[in-house]
Image (cartoon, rainbow, N blue to C red):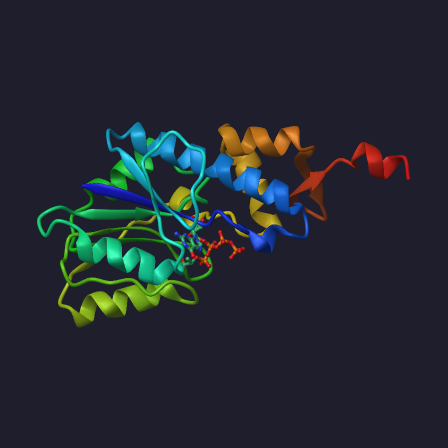
Length: 213
Ligand SMILES: Nc1nc2c(ncn2[C@@H]2O[C@H](COP(=O)(O)OP(=O)(O)OP(=O)(O)O)[C@@H](O)[C@H]2O)c(=O)[nH]1
Ligand SMILES: C[C@H](OP(=O)(O)O)C(=O)O
């Protein structure tokens, strides 16, 4: 199986801009990528990163500056017809080898791990004609596309794979359910769990320069 991890290197995680500065978003994205690559390697697979520009990581990488959908569709089109392809997003900071193994070993022409909010956080394609169409309700779109090419679809129901880290509310999930590089990065940056009106959230201690203003 080829396992490909798409990664946006230039201006990643813009939806976290309310809580993280641009450099911090880049660092935090790389920490999540590190966690995802480690979890994939622990399943025995060797991941390849599909990145928008060259990055300094210890993993094979392919640079493709085009948007996500055409870049991934080229990977699917160029794969060996007999070899399954897995696409695993780089912002799955809660991913473990166990849930990835479940994804990789689930039988089906197209195996989808939906994200909360309509996305497709990870998939395996064993069908030569399956293609992706990311963003919006991509989970529903991928079910339809699979149906159109006559591919069977199986869903993997996993909290860890459903939790992609997009918005500030998702940071609490990382602090609660991970102890990897992304969690450590958040703690070092001053984030911790707090409970406000019965809701758990990740709040950040005031930075020293702000306190001194
Ligand atoms: N290769 C590649 N990967 C992408 C691209 N856009 C997003 N990704 C990756 O695809 C996954 C899902 O990304 P999104 O959450 O939709 O986008 P994001 O750039 O991480 O965050 P936002 O700017 O907040 O939308 C993450 O692993 C991203 O790093 C792209 O244009 N090319
Ligand atoms: C790539 C996109 O991610 P989201 O924008 O849902 O995080 C999707 O899964 O379609």
